[in-house]
Structures are given as C-alpha cells and as structure tokens.
Image (cartoon, rainbow over all chains, first blue to last red):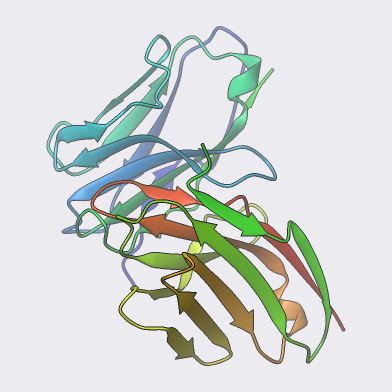
Length: 113
Length: 110
C-alpha cells in the first residue's frame, strides 16, 4: 500500500543547531503539505506545495524555517537555528491535488534541548 | 482564527455506546470535510470524508452527518470499541489549505 515516507522518526537537537526533515509523498501526488503539531493540538499548516511551487507559506516562520521541493517529488523542511519552542511533531501529507483527500506520514518527533 | 471548531475536547464512552463529535466551520468555500483518526505517536489517518452535496455518509460503524445551512457536521461512531480510543480531528478544505479542528480525545471504556 502506498504511503507517505518521512525521516527521521525522531530527532533530538540542541537549541541553535540546524535540523532537517525529509518527506517522500505518495507517487503521483502533486500537492505536498508540511504541518506542525504541538502535543494535544491539531496540525497547523506550515507550507503547501503544488508540484515544485510554493502555494502557501504564510504560516512558515521564514526567519528560521525553509522548505523546498526541487523536482516536485520529495521535500525537505529545515529549521536553523532551532529553538525550544520548535519541539513538536512535524507531519508531511500529500494529495492528488488541492482540496483532495490528504494522506499523512508517520511524522518526525522533534525535541529541542 | 480557527477555521474549524470542534467539540468536545474529550469524550468517554462505554463499550457498545455511541460516540458523537461535532464540528462547525466558517468558510463557505470549503467543499470537502474529512475526519482523521490519530493514535499516539502516529500521523493522522483518513477515516471518512463527505462533500456538502450529501447530508449523510456511512462507512461501517462510522457516519458523518452534514448540515450545510448550519455549517455544521458531526461524526458518529456506533458500537464504540476500546480500539476506537484515539484522537479524532475534523477538517475542512476548499481549493487550498486543509484546516483542522482542535481534536477530540475519545476513550472507550471496556
């Protein structure tokens, strides 16, 4: 069964260090989302791609976060420098297109110490 | 601004009972309303979804009821089982972003 792959599953990093997460969406899915989920809350969108283009990054803290999807397939989300408040689950999701059902990966649990 | 409001925050139901989770949305451009189930440490998994042209959708023990005029929709879990214990999120989307509710933690007591 096709699924969204994310790595690493867990990451512990020190404050002010750089950290990166990787996502490989379901084959053929043009839309890719990165969400952040703080424990006990719902996922909040950080950035949305349509193929290789960013369609919404209005909630992405651009002073420290960056995201890319160079060939319109897999994607990387980077945080530099990491702050204590960035500790959360980072979820990647993909769908055939905007407004279609989205499928999530297992997420990357980030802990900043 | 919370695009999708969800209640209750937590819910405890006896095995065999009916679990009901309610959501309301503001954005009339939304045309797709999925529900996700999330177990601890896992990503959300799509459970069931509905479009506003129907008032109800049923899949097994899970039913979505949709009231377009009130901009409300709800998830009913019939014959709730301990294995249904998880956090449930409603969501809404139009042409762009997928907006989530704040989640309902369901506990089904054996």
